[in-house]
Length: 328
Image 1 (tube, rainbow, N blue to C red):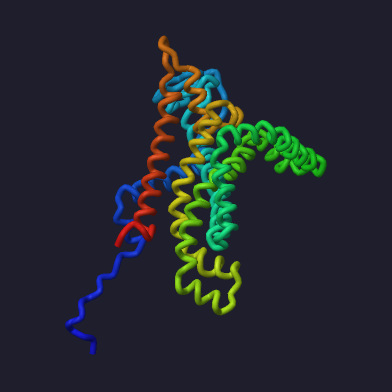
Image 2 (cartoon, rainbow, N blue to C red):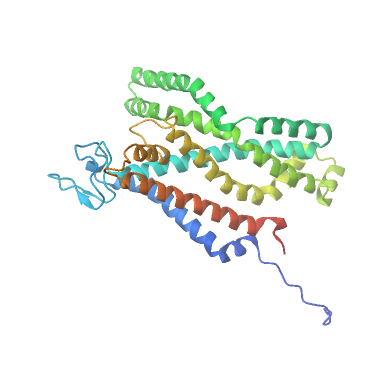
């Protein structure tokens, strides 16, 4: 029989239970899910008249273009393109760049940090000094140099695939490659952002591995003759998964901000494609004291700010729920 005098143990709620109790994080999660779903589905459902340029330039929100009867909920831009369609298309590009760039940095940073922390000693010291040297390089300047150096090569590569598809009469592939040329800078930017955003992730993972490698289950695995790769893959990586997921959500907004800044400078996506940064650039160009086209700047800024805020709330919620240092 159990000892009646023994104090009852109070089980600490699991990470997902803690996360569900965080209202701000759950609202952020639902908002981001709804935004991603809308950005993927809605542009295909909008009328064809809203997806092309027209003579109806600078139509204010909630008005229809004269003589066309086409209703523009968020107005139109200088080329007569519907802002709702461009905003959703830009969300698809910006969120996609943020997610893919963050995943690249996640893979590099996790692998680098695990190897550095598990190896220890001189290997760890050398790898961390390399990280410090890379962190001293201005990342925006590094990305700008890569875009300028590789953009032409990517366009030639895409054009080569287009010509190959035309030679084999693959019309769908040829059209897709032709459309992909507008995204050549984005492709280079995704890789570049992934190559500079992994440094913080590597430091976080390395710190966790330094603690976990002294744990009993790791010592027992090494005593049983398990290789270092096996220990990293079977024991350390599963214990790092929640930390990695948490900081992934905090890396995505950093990548999106970098992409938006570069697109604002004209180094990102090319017209007629759009991202939040390119929309902000277009809106800033038509803002003047005499006649302000406020909707061109307001709506992209609001959606981008709300998305950044939601990603940070979600990241904070995940950190509070899963970080072992968040308290009992």
